[in-house]
Image (cartoon, rainbow, N blue to C red; front, side):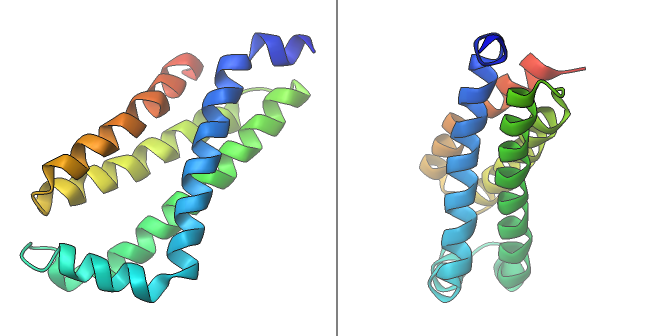
Amino acid sequence: MNTILSHATEILLLAFLVITFLQSGLDKLLNWKGNLQWLRGHFSKSPLKGSVPALLLVLTLTELLAGIISAGGIIQLLSGAGTQWAFWGGVTSCIALLMLLFGQRIAQDYAGAQTVVIYFVPAVFLVFLLQP
């Protein structure tokens, strides 16, 4: 119980990241064609238009990795075995969000970019809390 209390903020932030990135990554896997079609349209007038399938694959893998590592971070914190997984879950989540932010800015979707920032704040706060 003491471990939960001493790491409650980190566990809640990690749970947020697990939900966010596992859902997003799984959605991309389960609806690959739909996501690819939408993104091709979204980036049709950008320098990224020819790279959409490869970028979608990289983003999907990064999101799934962020969710999995964050879940491992919760387990590690609850077991009292350290904070390494939690830290790297936060870092990987920040990388995924920076990828999304870059894409939104390149596509000139500034409202979409603002939304990404809302997710970035708790992720970077987690990294701040756990920095070695």
